[in-house]
Length: 164
Image (cartoon, rainbow, N blue to C red; front, side):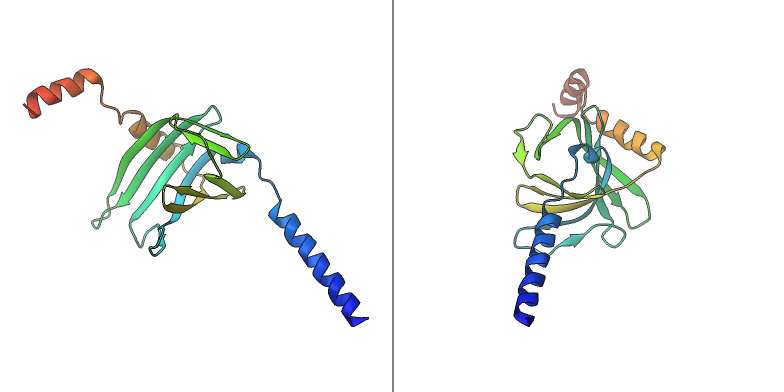
């Protein structure tokens, strides 16, 4: 009798575990602002982002496909530096993710719940947390990312006057 109950308990636990692993988070849950919690390059120690390291990253996913990414640094003297990385479009459908028109990758973004995703970029494994930031902060970082691209006429003037 004990063996039968043990087998039944193990079967029930296995079924519960399989059910938990197949819980699907809707793709639309990516919409919003995300802050990098940690990153780990293959073969290296995990880096936890935040106050201790003075470093994190910001990503924004709009419901219309708008995408922005920036690095955020807290300097030793307490100032925040926003370093825009990219601004453009993203797609995310049925686990296939693409940003900036690059080739879509399966499982590059894995929503583990409505507030967490893990992903891999090249040989770096990241964990991101959804964060409700004040509108003023989001708008500022988006503006920084949007203006990252130097207009062609200004680029030409810089080349002529600074790299002649």
